[in-house]
Amino acid sequence: MRSIIPDYLTEALGDVEPDSSGHPAAYIPELATADPERLAAVVATVDGEVYGAGDTGTAFTIQSISKPFAYALALADRGFDPVLAKVGVEPSGEAFNEVSLESGTGRPLNPMINAGAITVHALAGPAGATPAERVERVVRGLSAFAGRRLTTDEAVCASEMEHAHRNLAIAHMLRSHGILTEDPRAVVDGYTRQCSVLVTARDLALMAATLANRGVNPLTGEQVVREPVVRQVLSVMFTCGMYDAAGDWATQVGIPAKSGVAGGLIGALPGQIGIATFSPRLDPHGNSVRGVSLFERFSSDMGMHVMEVPAAARAVVRSNHVLGGGPGAVRVFQLQGGIGFAGAERVVRETLDTAPAEARVAFDLTRVHAIDDVARRMLLEVTRRLTLDGHEVYLVDPESVLPDPDPGDGGRVTVVGNAEEAAP
Ligand code: GLN
Image (tube, rainbow, N blue to C red; front, side, top):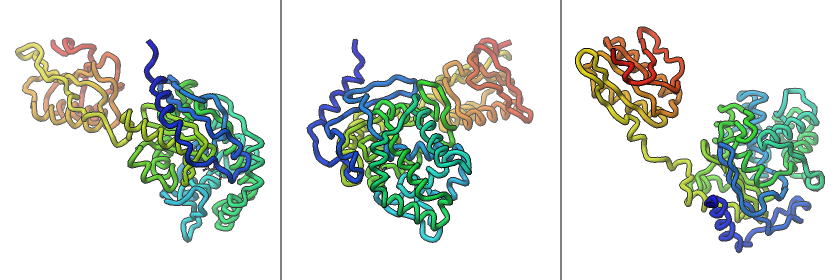
């Protein structure tokens, strides 16, 4: 049997193919020569499966899709505070190349517009790095996200530099406000080089999947950036990634995303997949026309809106029963699934409602596959309070989904391999 996913992607490409509206970006002369008919869609899962259809191996320049990744690198290299002091996180509601600086401070509103991205480029690598070292840091970082060494398109870079008056104006403004302390021309040159990195739709899907996978590249296993950085980047992509179309996008598509003027578009669905599309004709916002249609379709066909979640964890408590009888009877709460705050609250409530009469109480985690940090602390606090109430508490946890269970302060819990071991 053939996988259904590439067939689905091929069908989706077929549906958008006839749409020839929009125009390839013209302000970078070299980009205007791109073949406007190219079309690709790729989905990469967080465990490293890659599905694609169309021109998945065609190379094009990453352009603004580099912005969230360079932002991630700057946050990782310099820490949050120094970066936030220079670049905000507020949607601008304006075009990507608008000179939107916060009045008073001159701080760019967010890292997805050019003013922010130019500033971010200067923050990649250690303080005091040379322009060449900054570029190398960014290209190496983008490569780590993609899982292979990427190169730059010198022709596109030179072509954009020749017409970079607007970005140079922005950089000089930033320099006059003291947001940039480096030579504005060198920073714009580096930023333009960053935008000229060549990628394929497949590379972009893996870069997005690395964000979806908490910063770990699904193929190489490399932790490119840490989780707090990923959370920050995805949040900014969600609110600012599509420029002045960000609100429409957040409500209709609902996937943190970023577009580039060469026609690329990425989306990262946390915990699930990275998606990339490629089609050079752009709408008036500067987003790929067919790419936007594809994402709208993916979101509705596959239920990918981040605000759309699976049915509530109704059955975190799979069963609540008593094992054995007499003084050796054990009250067993059998839990299941992945447990977060809402799931742990169910367990707290079930325990309180039951008010176990039995001296022995066991939480059976055999069918639990994950417990997040707050749920772990809540479960341990329940075990602590049960101990204080005079119960003997057991965790049935053969696979250590809750490692080092220390309920603290007067609590005691015994880990056993199965519920029967809790009986005398
Ligand atoms: N290099 C382009 C610029 O700075 C990137 C813009 C984009 O992709 N939206 O103008």
